[in-house]
Length: 115
Length: 115
Image (tube, rainbow over all chains, first blue to last red; front, side):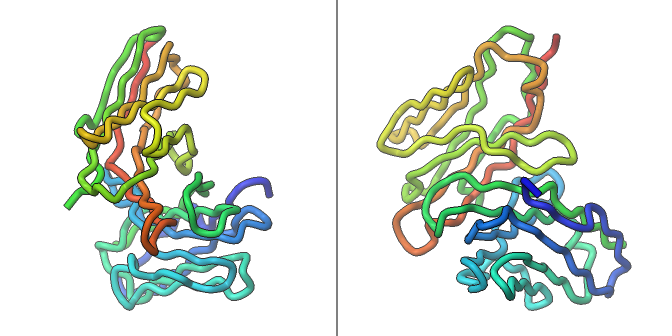
């Protein structure tokens, strides 16, 4: 597709369940980011990939969060043993640039609600 | 500790008038600033940016002003149109150091342009 695609758009999980969120970046974009946006807040950085290499995972809130991009294209954000505080919109973004300044192209987000 | 602050949660403006959205930052290492626009149920979309070597950048109806000494930037929309109604996020980046890909966002300002 022309833009960044994320699935599922909405996910309801019971506390303790594992969830997986998928991101299809713009074709050819080397950089891929995950951001978390809690209600009433701005997006907060989670992790950054350059191709298949995860160069920064400093924003991941806990070791229950894991992200991968094995072939340098599609990425998956996995959250194990979900907690209520994990409820948020998870935004994926991609860029044609390696690091550096520039605009990011965001997907529509995956809204996770943990009951 | 909020490094990027948007102190006005909302702003209401009449169609045709000027909208001014404000943003303050505390981190003096920030040297690149961006504005993103977000409609409900969509991801943020890039609007305009400015480097710290400039004090103004203009793109059509949108102008961003940067006052480095005050650590303040503003987005001006003239004339405002009902389609501009959205949440506007200010974001900042540091191009020095190792994390030059990471954006720090404010909480956003909801702009409503009334017909």
